[in-house]
Length: 314
Image (tube, rainbow, N blue to C red; front, side, top):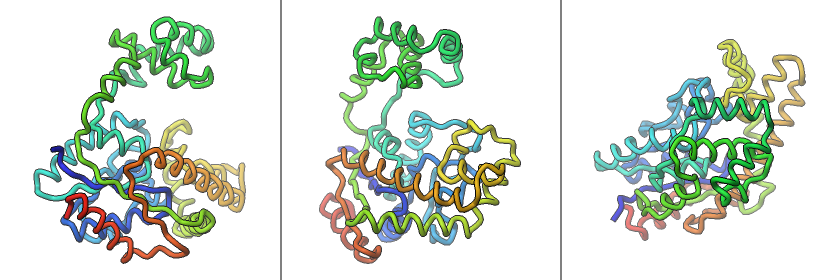
């Protein structure tokens, strides 16, 4: 039987950080972040990364471990996180994955092996050169010849995935379709017990997100963005595309007012939360805990502990 771990997920601002710490303290656990932006150093306020006080003595992993200039992917995350999860288990403790990046979390549970290829590799650079010179059509036509199944499900505007599919074939001689099919046939690496947090009323979630954005601005998000810009990060850096950072960069560059940036961050955060919920609803294994007007963590701890006990985690 695969070792059991806990996966605590949900949309932004739903209270994952707090409940994760409470569960870790109760169940002798350690928290492993599954957040695609909290991995970056210097993105503390805008990503709502837990502070030392919020961690409350509980070990946390995969937070502020990467330079904001680095590109990270699900494949790179899995490569880094599996030894951490295995190490927690070897110490006789409970790994608690906490985050809203569903793809990364699911890939870690699966222990997924991604097809070879790098965004900065020679094959990718050649494909990007062809894209710039010829456009996407010849590349999509080539993909149809070697991997018609993948080509059929990709929109011509999805340049990133078209390049990725060609890259895998050119580097390995195997289509990404064949690779994914073989990967999906493998059993999961861990026996995950999934718990999801959400609001019963979507309007309550929206109001909390708005209040959280205001709190981020008051905590110094503008200065955090200024510090990143002083490091000469390119605008294309993944970290600078995070919600909050791109909009507040406009304030510093004079293309937006603070009020406009705040409104845009609130809108994009609400849209992101909706996308997160859409993704997570695909997972029938999630045990949902629905907040009413306020988040009652003592109640959520009791409910989630009962869920975990029933699954053999205690």
